[in-house]
Length: 282
Image (cartoon, rainbow, N blue to C red):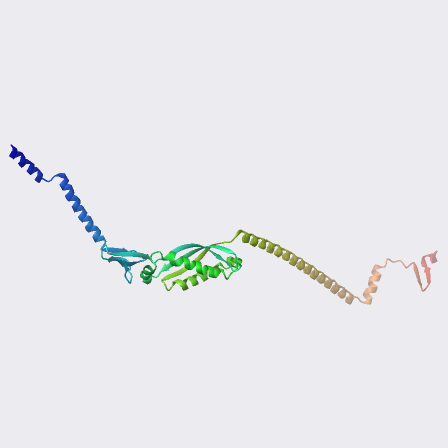
C-alpha cells in the first residue's frame, strides 16, 4: 500500500503540469521576441528628404546614408535622421535702430541643411544646431542691419532688410552646411512714444500738404482768371481795331444821317455868341 502510493506520487511528479507549460511558452515567446528585435535592429529606413548619420557606440561615422533601407550592426550602431528639407524657424528678437529706437522684430526664416554635411553638423554641433547656430546668427545679423537704418526707414525698407538678412546669414552659415533660402519680416514693433511721434508727424505732414494744395489751387485759379481776362481784353481790342479800321468818312456821315431825327439844331453859334434858332421863327 505504501509502495503503491510512493509510485503514484513519483509518476505524478513526472507528468508536466500547467505551470511548467506556461514557463516553457513564456521562454519561447521571449526568445522569439528577442530574435525579432535583433532582426529589426539590423536594418534602418531613411525617409525621403532625410539623410542618416551612423553613430557606432558614440562615434560618428563620416558620410551619410541616403534615402532607403540600410543594414547596421544591431544595438551597437544608431542612425540619426537629419531633415534636409526646407525648414521654417520663427525668431523674435530686439534690436536698435540708427536713431536708438528699440525695434521688436518677428522673423520667419526658411533654411535647409546640406545633405553632404549632415554628419559634420551632427558631429560638431549636435541635433540642436537650430538653437545653437541659426538663432544666434539671426540676432547678430539683424542687429548689424537695423543699426544702419532709422526706425522710420526700417518700416519703409523692409525688403532691403530681408535681402540683407539672407545675404548676411548665408555668409555666416554656408561653410557649416546651412543655407538660408528666404527671410520674411512678420512684424516691426516700436515703443508707444515713437508710434505717437510718427502719428503726429504724419498728421502735420498731411496738414502741410493740404495747405500747399489749397495754395497751389488758389494760384492756379488766379492765373486762369488773369489769363481769361487777358484773352477777353485782347479780343475786345482786336474787335475795336477791326471796327476802327473798317470805318470811312462816308460810313461816318451815313451813320449820322441814319441817327438824325429830321429836326435842325435849335442852338448854334461860334465863339462867344449863341443864337437860339427856335426864336427866329417866332
